[in-house]
Length: 133
Image (cartoon, rainbow, N blue to C red; front, side, top):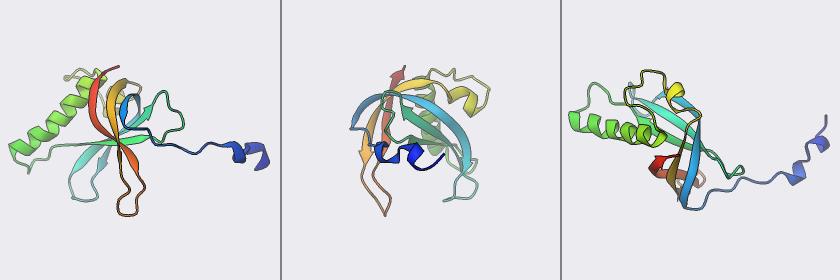
């Protein structure tokens, strides 16, 4: 195979989604360590607009509560998880992994465009989840 065989001249560029409501599918759910604060963890969801194959994936972070946070902050983070699990139709008592809970499931969300910032290009973000797909 050669470069010519890849037909690179005809590959479409990725296009950000316009602000609006989209059906999204979770492709990956992974627990990660925060680089900003030692000991903090989060779950990163990799989401894709099902009907827009040339749009870039959307990364959505759900911060996990930590032992040293006050109850108000813990509840703020728990509410974010609650909204996500409700949107994806995940039982709140589900005891499996993040991947087992989220991956392959679909939901609707309001997507907005975040402007270029600090040398990073503009990107799509989840404004809020709407309902289970």
